[in-house]
Image (tube, rainbow, N blue to C red; front, side, top):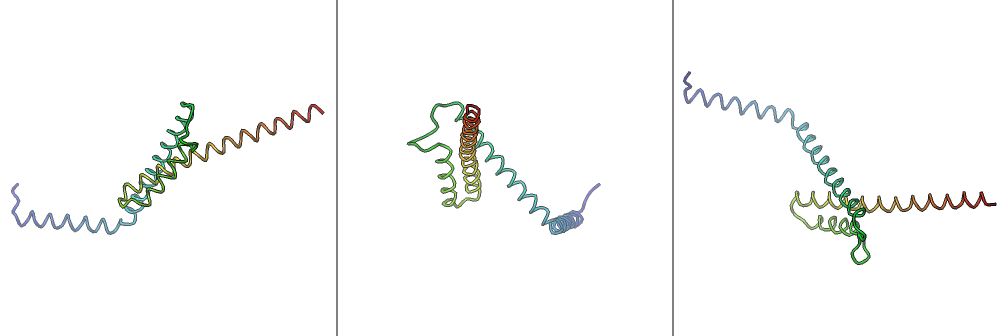
Length: 131
């Protein structure tokens, strides 16, 4: 089958028209899907960062520089740097890493507070038994 130039142009114009109509009809869904992908990506980067700091805390004796925990320092610096970056991709990455690092830091604080509370309660129970 041989297509004439005018027939091919007509088919192309028809396809372009249908694509534009599809995009217009589904624009909100496409935007939501894009936003959802960004949210999932951000969560995965943050979780990976937090996991990395947790691994470092378990693996190495010291996780501090000049008395500041690595995760706190990285979190504050990454979030601060995200305010200075013009690139959307750079801003996204720095915000995600900063969030993950601060989540790691606050998890460690919560873990320490929970252990202290458990030990205090155990000491109180022990003291009550000795009375």
